[in-house]
Length: 179
Image 1: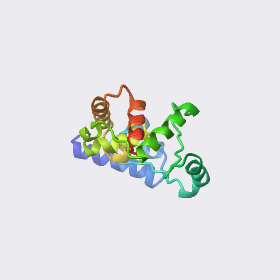
Image 2 (image 1 turned 135 degrees about the vertical axis):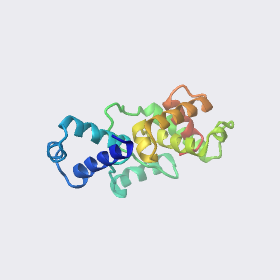
Image 3 (image 1 turned 90 degrees about the horizontal axis):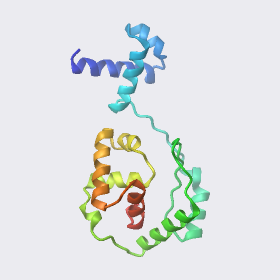
Image 4 (image 1 turned 30 degrees about the vertical axis):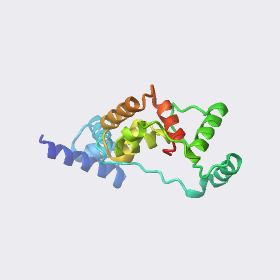
C-alpha cells in the first residue's frame, strides 16, 4: 500500500471513529479490517496529529484561587493548571515557596546569565510548556510536531541551560521570568 493510500485509510478510520461515532468493531466490519488493525490505525492517527483531543477549561474555573495566590504572594499573575497525568505528584510547600521567591526576583528584573539567549524560539516555546507541567506527548500535540522532535528540543534545552532534568529546566524558566 502506498504511503498516500495508507494516510487516506488512517484519516478515514479516524473520521469514522471520532466524527461519526462508530465503534471500532463497526469500522472493522464496514472496511473489512480486523479490529486490532482499526485500533492501531486510530493510535497512528493520534501520533500523526490527525486527531487532537482538546479540553477547553473555562476561564473562570480557578478564578478565586488565582486571585488568592496573587494577593497572598504579591504576584502580578497566577494561572492554576489541573493535571490529570498518572505520574504527577503534589508540589511541596517548600518548593512552591521557592518558585514564588524566584518569580518575584524575575519580576524585579533579575536576568539570567545568557543561557536563555542560546535557545531558539521553538526551544523557548517548549521550555514554557515544560514549565507549565506538560509532558512530551502533550507538548507535541500543542505544537503540532512529533514526539521525537519534542524530545530533541528537550535534550537541547537541557544542554543549553546546563540542567540535569525537566524540573531544573522548569525552575530555571520560572526563576528567569520565561513564564
